[in-house]
Each structure stands twice: as C-alpha cells, then as structure tokens.
Image (cartoon, rainbow, N blue to C red):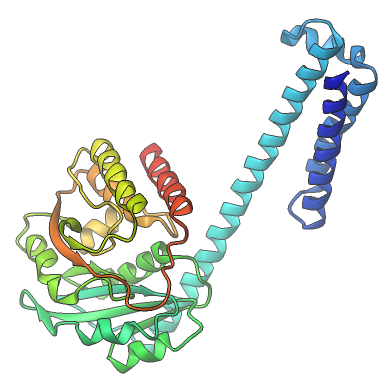
Length: 345
C-alpha cells in the first residue's frame, strides 16, 4: 500500500514539474505528452498495477503489485532524466549561439574603430566585470615594456554596467565591449582572438581585481620568449599568497594533483589566471568554458603536447569589492565539471 501511495505522489510531482516547465517555455508540447504518459502510467499503476504486467515482466520485473510499481517508477525516472539532459543540451546550444553572436558584434565594433597593430608586442588580456574601482590600479602598475616588448593592455568589458570601460580607456587600453556577461573564460577567448589577429608576439592573461602584480609579468613572459615553454602558469604556491580560507587551500591542492595526473605535467596552482603563452598555442587550443576556463586551458595545452611550466608569483588579497568566483562549493563543482568535460574531449 505504501508503494502505491508513493507512486501516486511521484505522478503528481512529475505533473507539476512538467506543467511549470511548459508554462516557462522550457518544455515542448511533445515532451509534455511524454511526461504525462508516464504520469498516467504511474496513476494507473497505483490503482491497478497488474495492467502493466505484459510490459514489465519481459523487462525482469516479477509479477506483484509492489514490483510492478517499482518498475514503473524506474521507467518514469529514466524518462524524466532523459528530458532533463535533453533540455540542458538545448540550453547549452542556445547559450553558445547567443554568445557567438555577441562576440561577433563586439569584434565588429573593434574593427570599425580600427584594429591596432600589436606586432612584436606583449598583449595583456584582462577580463573585467564592474571593476572600475580596481582596474586603474592594475593598469597604472602595468610596465611600459617587458623583455624588450611593448606592453599593450586589452580590457574585455564583460557586460560591465559601471565605469570599467572609461577607466580602461583613460589608461590607453584597447577596450572590447561585450553587451552580455558570459564569464571570464568567454572574455579571455575574445581578447586572445584579437591579440592573435593583431600580431601580438606573446599573450598574457591576468585578473582585473588587483590580485596579480603586473610588475611580475616578465617572470611569465621570459620562458615563452626563450622557447623554454609554450605556456607559463603563475603559481601562488611556489610564490606567496594570502590564504582566503582553509577549504580553498585544500581545493587548490586537490585539483593540482588531479590536473597533474590528467595532464601528465606538474602543476601546483591550477586555478590561477595569471599566465603567458604564444598566440600559436592559443590558436590550437579547444576552449569552450565560459567561466571555469583556467583548468580547461592548462589541461588542453598539456594533452596536446605543448611545453608547460610554472613560475612563482604573488597573489594579493582583494583590496575592495567582492569576488566574482561565487561560493566555494559551487566554484569547486563548476571547476570539476570543466575538468571532466575537457578530459572527455
């Protein structure tokens, strides 16, 4: 009797779930019919379980009211999971299409204004979302040249709604405005594409919140220019940093060991966004993560045979504002998914 009641409750829950998603245009009519077919099946099983014996018995569910209901619950859950994953895939595809359109519009604006000539320059790509207070400090500390190359900052305004763009232009940076916020990974890809197209000799990526020291840039650029490495990652573990929390410190160690194993290259600081690489290296990478791109970039480079190295850097505590990384566990989950997806590719 208990399973009959439970089956009925599941049927009601599925019906409510389907109706809400359909009203939000997140479920097509055909999918709604499939879900309600499962709902009616569960409801009928709660009243007369033996009706499905000809279907469930060949699948290995033995005769009996409770066993028949369990079989229908399993089948209905499989159907629901299939529809969920199908919906997630469709959402991801739509997000990619919108992101591609936004990037195209951003590039067209830059081209209309005139692309600069960055040949034999060090392009510093900085993604920024509402960093008007901290960005001037970062750009103000930027060296004029590094290892004999002129330094040219490229700031990607990732849907910023404050004075980020004006602050960047005041320091002579090339500003690429994206009308839709997608995340630092998408912003980095866009900025690196511009750096590659304008002939930059080396590309440096860094954060806009002031945690990375621009004066340490030569540590990253040097090994790339001397052909000792194709990509150089900054490491707070080898250098200095202020620990934000014990959990984050443990997370850095865990993911460092995981990426070392998967990429077959030693890494101590997998979540650091301060790095240097050749434009040719970037051009060959398959980067798809909009947010948790750091692990994807390093792992993809290592799996494709690029020479990777780490150098010690200093990561400073954020002076003001709040981090854009989100809660620790949420960030860890997103970071993990990025690693799994990259490794599976």
